[in-house]
Amino acid sequence: MATAAKPSPTSKSASAAAKPRTAGAKPRTAAKPGAAAKARTRKPAQPPIQRIVPCIWSNGAAEETAAFYAAALPDTSFEVMSRYPETGLLDFQQPLAGQPLTVDVLIDGYRVTLVNAGPEFRPNPSISLTLQFDPRRFGGSMLRARAQLDATWGALGFGGRVLMELGEYPFNSRYGWVEDRYGVSWQLMLVDPEAPGGDPSGAIAPFVTPCLMFGAAAQNRAGEAIDRYVTVLGSAPSLGERSAVSRPRTRSRRARRRPEP
Image (tube, rainbow, N blue to C red; front, side, top):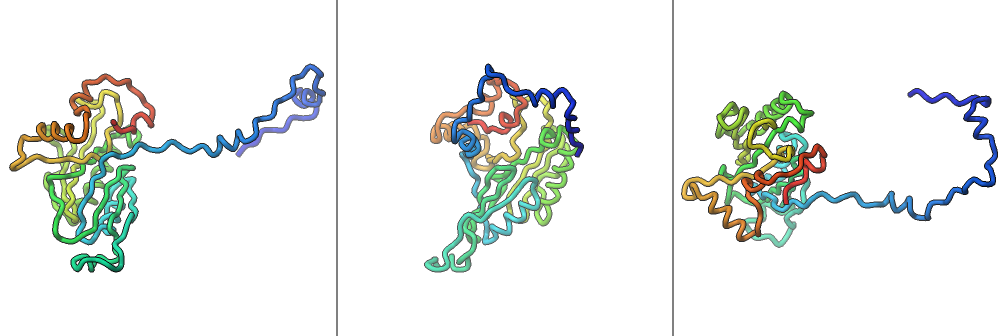
């Protein structure tokens, strides 16, 4: 690293520094005690609370599943949050003594909880997690976003089964639906920021979005379900209402990543 040359004793800055202060010079005021310490100990802003946390049933392999996702998904980590006790369990819980009970998986900061239990239930495609690969997450490069999508598709599909082949569809230029080896469904899609119908704020698409599919007896009842959820959970604008609201454009990272209330 280059260092600035020291001024010579005959330089103007050195001679100026040697001059004594005049009587009229204002004395410097000392900083208030504790001010610097208070600034140093200021708590950082807390991230917004995630209001809905998807919980996925796991057949005795929650920690193994979490490790699989940490390897398959970008920016993903996991942590065992609680364990079964060693004693006092019911008969059907005995094989899980001391094993993880809940494991949190953080996918780009989005929390998904794996609940360790038995074979009574299994995830199915009626609930899936959608991953949106927005090129603005990858330096604005569509090629890098597509490459990460393809790599994630291959990792999640290893040992699983394809529900919709990865390819081009009328609704998306790069989309696929896969069920991983643990029965969890993932929909992967490439985001085109210039496509019509995007977020008017210009915000980066959320990487993880839970998706509910209304089929069979629930076919065509999604609108009815939305009305019911709003009644039970409180008033909230629907996606259509949100997109109709004009919001100022911003390129601030904090503003882009802040979830809707």
